[in-house]
View 1: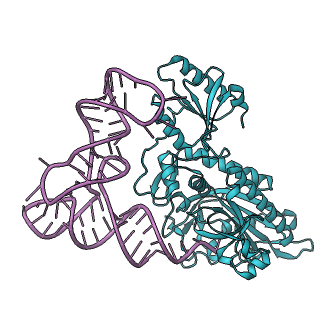
View 2: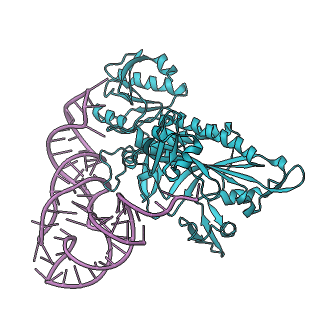
View 3: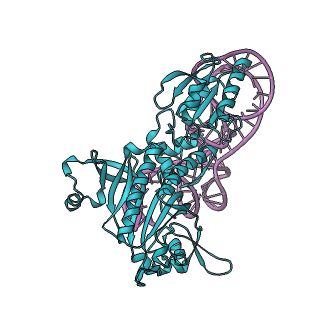
Length: 414
RNA sequence: CGGGGUGUCGUAUACCGGUAGUACGCUUGAUUUGGGAUCAAGUAGACAGGGUUCGAUUCCCUGCACCCCGACCA
């Protein structure tokens, strides 16, 4: 992509009404646009990051047996009344509206009810199970207060997978597979080292749920980490009894603030019974389908990366999620030789299927470097006085390290 | 929802009860070209409504928006 053609605009200063670092940087670098409090649009650069994150998640979900689908954003009142979660007293984040033709609808803040209700038409026998389906959906939540920029908005993209199994034993298999898949995701997007599997409250359904918590001072949760075992306990269930149950020693735990970047749940059979989602087992007996749900906030992950990986110059994208692999910065100016050299390198890399943002603009070096630092692509190739036809200056964004690389090395470097 | 704060060109800001200024951006021209260049000319603004006042962007009220703390976050 030629930067002269890219729809974006960097800003020297952040808007005065944004205090959170993730929103400041993402707006300044031209990744997101703020529509209103807690509601952000994703511009081409930001969308590329989102899609990269989604693709990593998609690959891991598919590998674990998940099948992608997409549910609706409009939901039926009657369905949510069945599980007693329609009233504003029970769920205070509902956006609701009425149909012109008559009747009430809700805007999707979660999809357990509709997706499980739908399953009634498809899951009738133990032969139909297990089923693992997931989607990437925009969730709408009427939060009393939006905060922390993109981290906690009223509109956000979430991956939610639902597992339908015959019993606890079958459920355990997918649940363990999901824990592994989630850990793969966080490792691949670059948050693996600071993201911990965390024991948390299971709400009304089970003793525990598991969260994935990324250590950050802007987080809203407090966790206690065992750095050797790489697991943690959320403050909400941090008791001697729970520690003993999990086998953690209090003295070894480190307290930290953290961002919840994922949450997986064991619902058991109770919700299925409420909804009438039953199947016949081998003996012909009618049983409730065993339900699990697995959430992962895509936009929140993007904001978390912006928050924890950035420096005073701007964003620093991990290789797995960066909008481009290389930022090719041409300092050719009026020098036709340099321009041709940059053009040729851009063509070569692009034809090899490598994503390159090519800063072919007329701007001066300082502005280009500042923009490049702000946008945060992992590797910057500088075509200028230090380059030749065969060797190029390459700067690593995260470390600032500069080295010289050949075209072949650029093509193979990964 | 409770408490606190803020609304001035596209962005960041200044001043002021009496002609709203600066920087960046943007437009045009010239000179520049390895870390946000220089010069010149131009462009563009007081959240909305009401009140006080000879006169309100400024003071007061209401609304709206945004930010922060808390509460909330299956």
